[in-house]
Length: 508
Image (cartoon, rainbow, N blue to C red; front, side, top):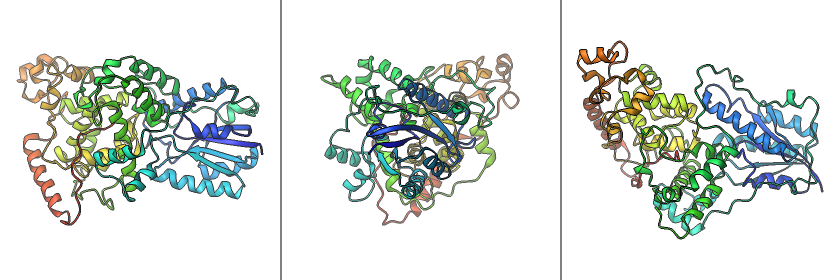
């Protein structure tokens, strides 16, 4: 039987290592590659301007690659459950393919669409390619439960063997009997999204540091894989949170959107490692990809994973509700230059180093402001290019010492931590130019500068730059006591998972 097939792109915005797309081409006569702008996912609350720009770039790049194969991308606007019945009838579809997605919303959406497809006699086929492994299989191998430590997960991975090898992108040969019908009004009806479509203010947009798209991801991958010594010696904790250019690969946004296949990344690293001495998980680049699997597995196996309440592994903490503190943190007005510089970089560029994430997450939650990690999770989801549901929820729980990591007495100093790798405060000067004339001895603590020094620097604390929002030395000690109480309240028979080996936020 020959098929009229829709391949539904969601994540997986690429042609390489896309088994669901290759399955669509089998016995296919007409192919409709579709991307749906779903109001539940693509709205100005969930998606900040940088993240939106990245997605628009990724879709344009995908359309360009499809056109080289005499096909193209159909961008449809609306709820998938309302869009698909119409498309099934209009195009006389017989097969629907997509890449499997483990997020709760995605699973329920896909179930609804599958039911509708069956009603329209459309065969549905999905493939696993967003993760290195089949996440459900990992849980099965651990007696039906998510492994709660990295070491336990590594033991499971060992029994499963290496990830599947990636498959090549489709070629003209694969497409020779396939056509993509296009109407004359295609551009109007299925047009690419624009930067202004979600109503964002595009005037404030800075230069795009990390353009979206498969071609850009492969170019960056090639570039990094040439640095064999750096790849083999990579140890995540040794990289710098406040270097002026990224000290890691910044491939995580490309893996998040599926512009770059995690399996392609894994096997390219394996080629570089071959026959050479190299770092190992958890700190190596392979180790970072395995952290991603760890949090994906946790997110599938643990109910209510992105919430405190109803989440069985999450410590229940009496976080404060303080909209002023939250806004000051979010808008880089805490009066701590290291924290404010990080939050400024996040808003301007959509990316910050993993240790910078540690610093601002600890500051918001158990370190200083005592605000729920769920609030920080929302801000990161909106602003980070690599904001990923599972990794975001897992790492906020980790950094707030709510789950996975339990050494709550280890608190990042908003002053001393940044000084370790940037004594002169060059990073602060870059993102907070208002402070750039302050001498290095005061740049992390401008409130300590004598009035005459502040005047000479053109920055008066309390007028040009805020006073510190909290007294770190005092409040952090008080918060450690509050965490102690929260831990004491945990039921004594609850099995507490031991701390894993390393703090990682997987921004590669």
